[in-house]
Length: 146
Image (cartoon, rainbow, N blue to C red; front, side):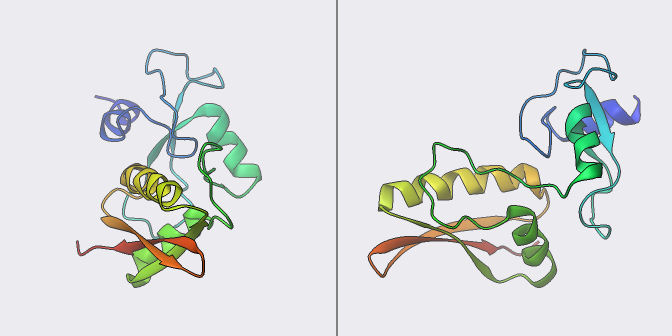
């Protein structure tokens, strides 16, 4: 197997930047084609290579990677997820990542975060919690033990 195939299989053929599927059969020269990103945001990352679309990988070289929160989520002041992942990996503990107007919105965000972090930071087990506070609902991520 090639490095691309190994990384693709490990990452479930999903782009680590945009979290969209990557077509293994598409040309590596196509913007939506597969590529191996060997320069992750954290140079000390335990996983040196990640799967990315060619365009996501190229764009990442010009601008800092931002993991977008889905528009369908109703969140206020969402935290930058790359930074959260780096801090949780380095220090552990808990991070407040968003405020939401309702418990349902907060739970939907918490569920999405748990799923997204399983691919964004494989090997970093996180749990999400929802707590009421100040007339809103707070979403917190906590790093689990490895």
